[in-house]
Length: 335
Length: 276
Image 1 (cartoon, helix red, strand yellow):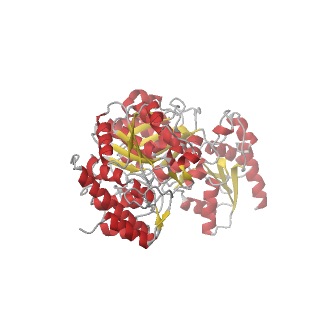
Image 2 (cartoon, chains in turn green, yellow):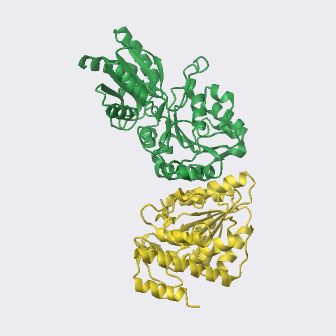
Image 3 (cartoon, chains in turn purple, blue):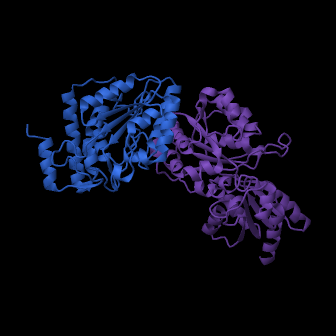
């Protein structure tokens, strides 16, 4: 079947597609994005790396130095980078495009739609600085990128929880024969060597903790906040399930329905607007299923923020573990 | 498959056949992209019947030359060219823009590899062509990449990102043809955004730029020949075309979308297809 036959299809249908996908074992077990990409590229000569002036913060400097003939520094030209990636993918390459989340989504949305999503090309779009996580301020804070990318047919959307899951996320991004948006945190610092590796499968959530009262479905860095909130809740006698929903699209709808059936309350937690991201995706599944369960959406409450440290911002905008625990306790009193 | 080096009179006859299809296709709808289709017919005849290295039996042949129409609405001409070149059936032209037909107003990859990229959202085609040229060069392929942009399209900022980038990368396997017909929806391009000198702009961005009469097949062939000989720089051919070219009573009319009556279509066809 020609690639064009995929055009106008029914969107992300699940897994795989690249029959001859190649990536080294080191990619799967890497605890940094840059190491995972380089290992995969060393195993698969189709992989090329495109940058927009940010090799160091997007962890692609090692690729640049090791595989210079497959590294393309496009300059501060994100729209041109996405268009060029579409041309490369149509010529048999698997391009990985890098910048900050805001600049590879909102800034280049039409280019992504026409030159990656519509033709269902294996263009992998990798953004850094998710949500409220930087002193750089509102220009660099991606609060709508998940919403934008999730709306595009054919696009898979992945936000791994941290270093423990990034290698598996890269492998799955490669295995999906189509465009992927990979949303990554910058400068992961939490004991990378010690964290046990976590699996990742496109279309699958991963339960990290089982409880009976509330299920918290979290994505990206909010998984750690949700786990800390579960500890706080346990001290108050509330038992929480915590699920890592790193695959935003396709979403594990079966798991959402299952969780709705065995908890009193569902909570979504994302470093993103409550409009259009994980909270919306879970709401859609619940509404479609006619599930009568209450849902609390932790996230940016339809507002622009300001620059600051991550800890400061998560606290100020109601995303930190204590806020999640408070919100859960209050909601449980109402159900 | 190499350049055909067809005699100019053959290409002239070919361009006339393309124009006749364009008139028939637009006349069947009464309105459409008529004038710019007629205006660019000589460029398309030169590209598809002399310059481009293609195999109609194997349109996805990896070593083919690539062609991208960034002004993807000029499709009466594009589809007519496909049909004459054997890439689609001539009868398919009867379905142009009809519900359910893959021959949409803006060409899309629904049509398979003969449409190399889905443009229509103006300003994107040169970036895609640049990516193809980078990819082909990395693989050591001899295939070349050709892209047609409209002059109004040059108002899009992304074009200049790509122009800087292609010059910076020294992509001599990339050939841009600008269809300088002074037409955009709002009217004369110079009344919307003054753009001259275009050739000097591209030269300043590191391109080999030339200015030609885009309705003179000899000049078109000459410019394409010259572009193939350039080393270390991409080529930009600014082709001044006359909307409505080839049909005397339409030449020089200025309308982004033109109406044509059945009577005028018959007059145009009588001119383009004189009885043998």
